[in-house]
Length: 67
Image (cartoon, rainbow, N blue to C red; front, side, top):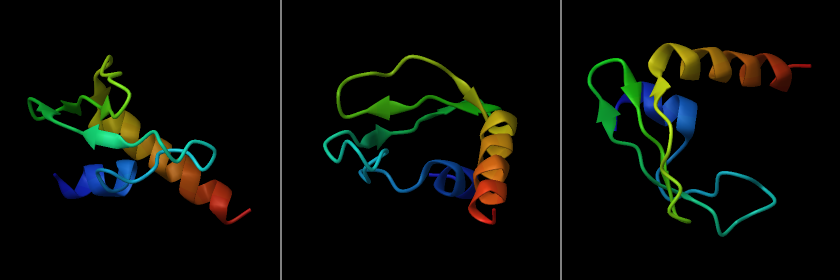
């Protein structure tokens, strides 16, 4: 997995929400050089997430952590 994905998404197989330890990120295959598709342990795999959008989200999370 690309470094950007590891920063924005966390580790593959790690819980994605503190309230649902059973739901994990199963895979994150790249879509060209511009995006990634997220695949979750419950089978949900819709949506293409551009790297720019994930970087923006990770910045918002980091800014909120300092508040």
